[in-house]
Image (cartoon, rainbow, N blue to C red; front, side, top):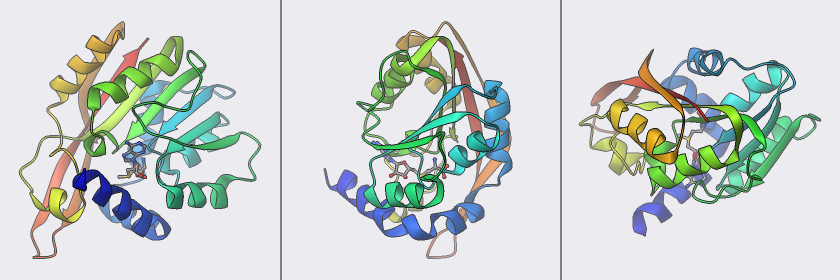
Length: 210
Ligand SMILES: C[S@@+](CC[C@H](N)C(=O)[O-])C[C@H]1O[C@@H](n2cnc3c(N)ncnc32)[C@H](O)[C@@H]1O
């Protein structure tokens, strides 16, 4: 319970500076690659899960999709509304990855970037990514591979030290997805601890079709 409380507090505190922090952690290419993997098309309805300040939402709106962005942090939701609230194709909703506030079978493509390593139950989140998709809908998840950098857990309040991609792909299969692929995204997440330890961790993707 302490971990969860600390993680919530952490994102409440960094919401207004997340865009600048994020640029130091990983490149804009992450979102372009995620959208290309999903094969997004104008007019489709996308979900950005654990949206933060809308790194993915911004690119999805730019490619003329409708976007539902979900986050549990009220400070992140305020940033989302400040940035995209006036856009007719954008909706933000407060909620948890374990019970997404999105109707069953209504989404063409769902995305989750750098969220899985924060959630208490990865299986529950992936089950929700499945539930919200239309038949034939696509999910693309991007996150970092398993690592040994303890400061991600103690300084950023991560719940998990990354994941072996094959384990996440297995969770997608167990959730019922018909077709599942995983692989390296060709991008890294980098960070530096308060003691000056530098980390560079590869990012992987899982792409799945309901
Ligand atoms: C590392 S940030 C990533 C934000 C964004 N996807 C990006 O790529 O910049 C993780 C986000 O997930 C949200 N989050 C973490 N756990 C969550 C949960 N269980 N339910 C909903 N949102 C969650 C946090 O509030 C935070 O905004």
